[in-house]
Image 1 (cartoon, rainbow, N blue to C red):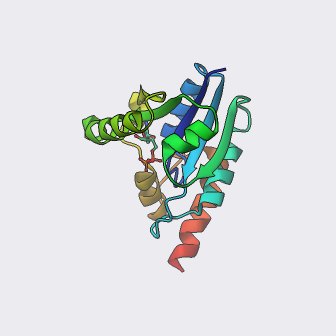
Image 2 (spheres, helix red, strand yellow):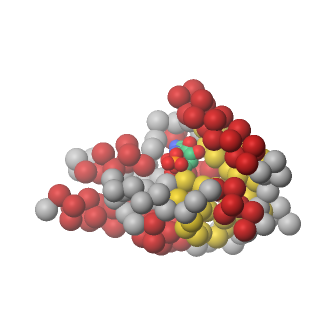
Length: 162
Ligand code: ADP
């Protein structure tokens, strides 16, 4: 059984993340989305909330599971029997950072390899930060965030403002 982990902040999950999830879930038996519990004070959602938002969005994809973790990604992968890490590449600006993480992870655990999905063109500019920025100024986020979470994200941003 080929198990992969897709690690990230997912604060919150975007249509770009979902695109990677759908494509990755077709080539592995089980895809575990690992929400990094990085205790960032700037995060909009807690790790538990981010997990719940992702679960809402992936509920119809049978071979996808969601969990949160802290510590090293390779340790989380190993504990779950995963040998593959999934990451996404948008522009060249992602490349250097992603290469560094992939090489570090491979050094930490040579049994684990990273595979990259190049972004679909329509999401090449999209990040969680951009989606939050647009939503916080009242712009339409229908092509940026999965429908199931738009209300929650909008309300959360409103509550942070007041
Ligand atoms: P991190 O904080 O670890 O970068 P993110 O949630 O921002 O976590 O992203 C997780 C992964 O998904 C990263 O590899 C990132 O490059 C990728 N990703 C984010 N947005 C997109 C997108 N629009 N298209 C493809 N990959 C993406």
